[in-house]
Amino acid sequence: MDYTFEKWQQLTYEQKRNIWNHYWTPYNPTIGYKTKKNILENFIETSKVKGFQFGLRSFGWEVYEIYVVVDNSKIRVPKKFADLPVNKGLIIEKIDDKLVKVKFDYGGTLDIDLTQKIFIG
Image (tube, rainbow, N blue to C red; front, side, top):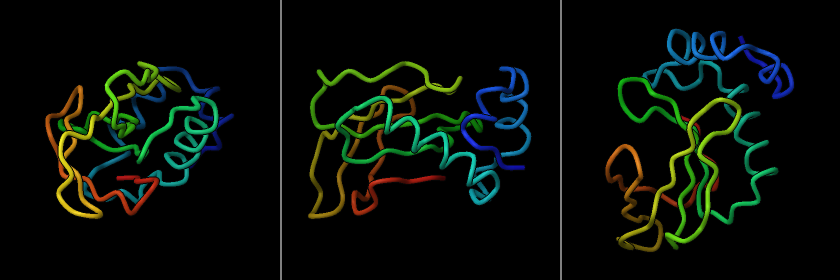
């Protein structure tokens, strides 16, 4: 069950919530991959946020969110996109050339590998 961005936007909030609550799973991120990718690509294109990494993943209890990793807390990020919450992550420490420690508004602190510009989990 994959959707183009346009088809996703035509779904009701309840239909979307049913998909991310009962169909998408962090244990098998390939489920709904094309839909997640379409949403994320459209977010990147329309938001114009300058981020080091963009992603769509579960932040616990299977709460799916779009996220953006930035290096300046003053960078503005939308609160929602396509009915999904957007979670801003601020780089707080550079661990090595690829790995950084990121503090998210929601979901705590994670080590993120910045070699991938887009991450879908």
